[in-house]
Amino acid sequence: MKNILIKTARRKNYLDICDLENKIKFTDKTVFSSIDSESIELSVPEEEINLLINKVLEYKLNDNFYIDNEKVIIKEIKLTEHKRKAEEKKFKIKNNSLTIVFKSPTIFKVGYNFLDFSVSLLFLLSAKKYNRFLKDNKIILDKEELKKINVVEENLEKAEFNSFMGEVKLDFSNISDEEKEKYEHILNFILKNGVAYKQKKHYGRINLI
Image (cartoon, rainbow, N blue to C red; front, top):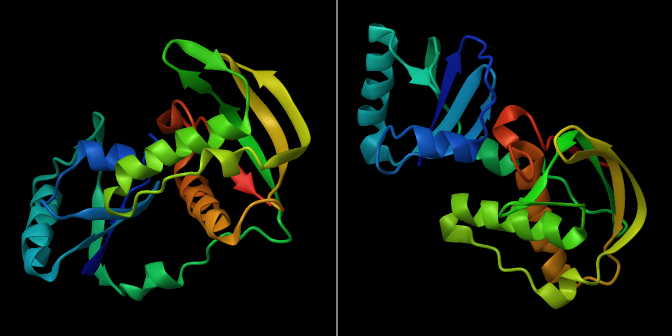
């Protein structure tokens, strides 16, 4: 696989990787790896690299690249080292404890129902989104193990549109190491992509401590 970095002028609208995957298709085997307000990074098999670059250059030359009706100005396209992703610093659960800071309004919605925070909802909804994006590396959570994650402290406040903000401290001391590794994958995913409902509107932004 080859990594391509597309640098853009700063964009106003927020997108996560799942949104991007649904809205843009450069080639059949393009995999988006990261996105922020001024760049898009993706991977593609070597045999499709020229097709991808030509397509991006065409957008740049014609000045007609749009995402959700927002014009995206492409400033630079370059190959990057594939090892960057492997070396990227990952969050780890230390001493069987972590605090999740919900730094923007977060909404748990199932069907037409808006629900309060629960550990089960947090991880089951996040795993569903993770599996939708990473289809070749799906995570199946053991629901009995999930019940063993304890809420040590909960300091949440109601916010706009049936949402909440604040902090939750979780204890993983009763979880097997194998299962804990699954939760670390999910936590790293939602750290980048947000959690729960309306992530593309800046809802569900978190920090991990």
